[in-house]
Length: 142
Image 1 (spheres, rainbow, N blue to C red):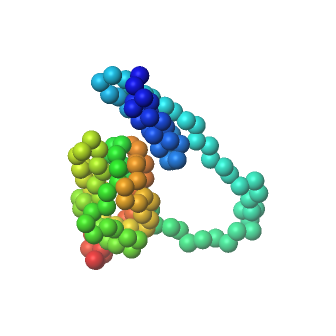
Image 2: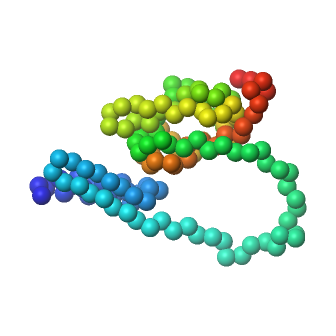
Image 3: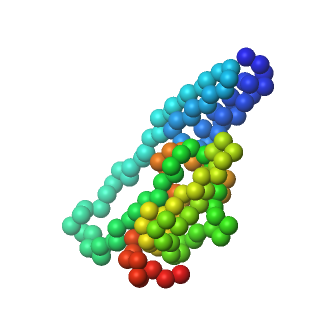
């Protein structure tokens, strides 16, 4: 394997190591690389007793907008921010993969509750991009 290809593989492994992704698969005309790593989640050792917690008001149902493919996150020309209203079918962002820009549309009418990625970040299939709070069609106003 040529030195340039080895350096390319090292860069890909470094990208995987510094990302939240758990798997990377790359295939060229001369070689194929598939790497998986175990990502562990930590949980707090001590939790408050449930009886002592004050009841919280019910939170509206969340809708997670997820990446439909592996690629790089690209916001739309006017990036969405927390509190922005989106309509069902509205383009929320783009995912750049293999030189193509793929639209990600809102599955519901709602309000943006969280923006989970930044411009240029590599995303994997199924990774959450936004959290929406679903709202009725007549209630959403820009």
